[in-house]
Image (cartoon, rainbow, N blue to C red; front, top):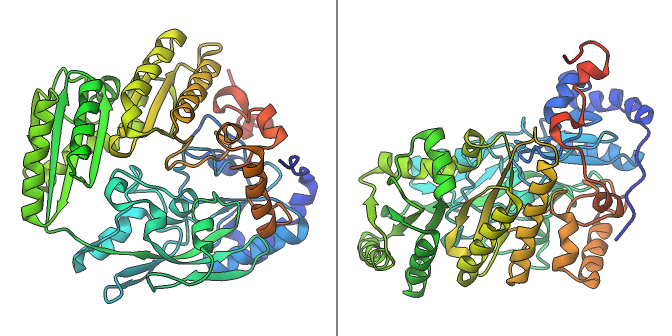
Length: 497
């Protein structure tokens, strides 16, 4: 693995500000310390660093010009969308430029004839479906943050969502990209056609976490809205019983659009946050959503009811309409934020295990929790074994954050040991880069690094992310609480008391 890139002299970075303003305009460059602090982390606030300069381009040409300047001057850049990522993939650099695409939010085209949409990277995920819905279409990838997360960020992380069991991840729904390369060139990959000839460069770019450039325009596949959607909520006494139901459903040949599970602690948090009214006393709840032709959905729903009952479900509810379906999903969609109601701080983890190993891994997680004194709430895409354990701790308690980080890392080790992965959809970023050598051997990592270097020889594109570096693995980036003084304090304009 390469050594960490040389840090840019802050004075040199400041000399670039007039040139950045010439590209993005006065209101498109942020240098004020307190405003820069707004961008110090993504959704994983456990890691934070105030960016050296923030730029907010409005066009693809402006993005390309910014990256061209960074390449010429050897200044690192970090792409950022809505900032909802959960792996510190958008963690800024104090010596670099943070390129924020939130102003690029035009829906360029809804093309029903070709069943696709062309959008800018700052468009919110759910807004594509809202624009396509009047035509009877929708966009399938649906991360829990879909109301606010942006398409550009979904591209960078190859985001999934609850319905990825049946419909796949972002990469399965992107037809074309316009990207700004690290050298500042605008390049088009793919288009509106279902398949493009040649090497799958789009597949390499999607999920590359901003290390190969920035998406400036995205063409996504639209799907026709299903004839019928049925959502079931099944309550079980234990997670093991719920897991048995999942295995029964999949092995019976039923392919739901989604199968989601929450344990008792996650349910407690969701009830406190959004009053989702799940069955009282449930040790686990299972949300099963079926879609497709009405006759198929009805038959599958009856089979799911039978299998859940046979696995010990003590209550099964079926949503009577869109409003009740949204209420069932509200608890699951709010789960990550909801744990803030029951814990001062937490780490959102993301790993994958074979579905058949779910019960054993959850048992091991429970043991880790008991031994460490760190509570863990479990929320996961049960159908494909994608775990989202929420590791809870009190950041006011000395050493609690370190213990939580150890538990978080140990959970990823469990995933690897059972033949799984250190990430299902949140990406590697900073948070899991040091786990990469546990999953890949040196030759694999060297191959990845050579590919990255071929497209970014200057090493300016989101350095110290995705692949491990000595500095990254030997020094944890700052923790939000107490690690970085407020900019006004640093400038001597205020004091803490």
